[in-house]
Image (cartoon, helix red, strand yellow):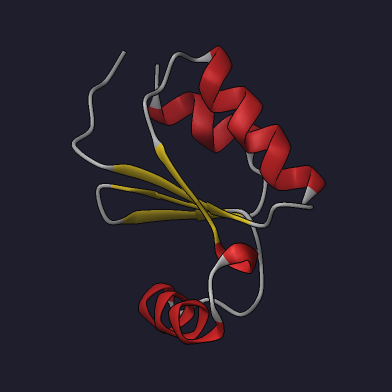
Length: 81
């Protein structure tokens, strides 16, 4: 499996698709950090969303600066072959 330095999953605590990405990463034995954006205070939410340049679309998976927005099982699996 390919190794990456930093993997972060930005998700919402109530998001079905976010949970599916988290499950997929776990099944692939990927070590990652998860941030539940909706559980942060508003100031932190704004800061993260500005940094990600996202428009309220989750999940957002950041792998060494590359983004996968939404649930894309094929793209995730391809990165960890």
